[in-house]
Length: 577
Image (cartoon, rainbow, N blue to C red):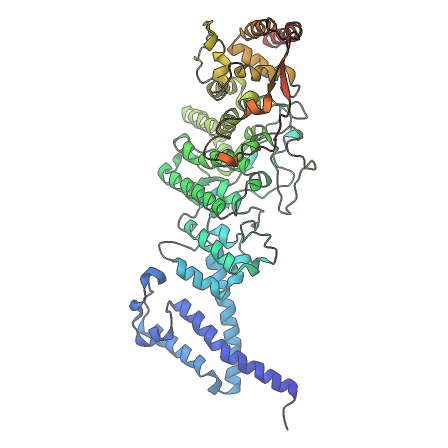
């Protein structure tokens, strides 16, 4: 009886699979055994391969070589075997390919890549056989591109436990626990190769490529590659609960440089965009709590991002959850008054949380005091970095140090609450008044060129293009309701003659032909730093403002007299309390 068309079609498909399967299995087996083709196996001269492209060739015993030759011979002659054997071999082939794919997934997702052992050519060969492994993590916590970066140590994310300053008050000691990265230094150089392979097999990421070749893929805890590249680093899992000062700082500096270089490469590939800095809250995540010996290196990523997008300092940090939804209902950037400097006062991380909790059980002593001092220095470092950047890019606002959020809380308030008022004032004086003596002595020089040295030093020397510019931060504090009175108080403490000097300048201005005694400054133009925002950003430092946002009036004498009378009375009241 002639076979039915259905059976003929089934037999034809089986024959096609039989013809294709040996080649696939042969190639996969060759990859696993480290041989490029079966001719190499038959000749037994595996060392003739180019080690520069294929890497070190594994050494196999004669028995292993014979087994591989026999396996490939069976596959080549599978059609000559009985039907029962062919069916069983088909199952074995299917399981073999499935197991090989699982091995490839484990190799990519479980941190086995090592530049001392593996080569880019080997990685390319493996992914070409199983490209779907790039877009999947299966039972593993990380995607291949994240595993090549390292392992994040963190607590499970709690959607109700994020840094939302508007729900905190000055007596709240809650802090933001940041994850730390155990960097896989040996696998980090393979990230560009994985990206190139993603471009080659871009269909595995979907038609719209919303995951941006896997860069935006979230691991089990909701972190993407940007989180891995911007968070603080450790060197080994055994050090994850010890102070950062115990680490080999030279190795840490190398890691930091590699991570920064990787960010630059992603930017060059147009895979790290400026809007990502705000969208994924990268400025906040890159604030470092590293030890002082490696602080400059570890803060370079933060400086790099700030120079690229300085306006991120004055905009609200956006928290993107695992579902990709902003957990704040207000989507207007910065409208709630919270800026990066607010958040910088509440940063801690996995290691410092563990070490601080373990130190509580120890008896007090000198070692404990020294340890607490080191921990305090590391806790205040994010605040110092953010304040320095703020004064650098926004000197007239003093880095938004005294700007209130909707609850009337300023970064200065939070810093005083976290680090004590004495420590905070010392930080402010060091950063905002670097040229001042430690005793806060007054400037008695009445020379016109140095009459505003106090505020000139406050602005760090960045706003000296006009003689009147150093007074802007003081004037802003008097007319802007969003700036707390503490700003005036601290500025007057640095230069108690500021009011008198300002009144004298206004009286002199009233003697001119301007009958109204009013002069207007272009706040936007004067507030821009000449180098475009600092660093090498150049034209990248782009503000959305293209016109003057508002102008600051130099008020006539009568108005200033009333205004500063109120200021002085408030100053006296605050100083008495």
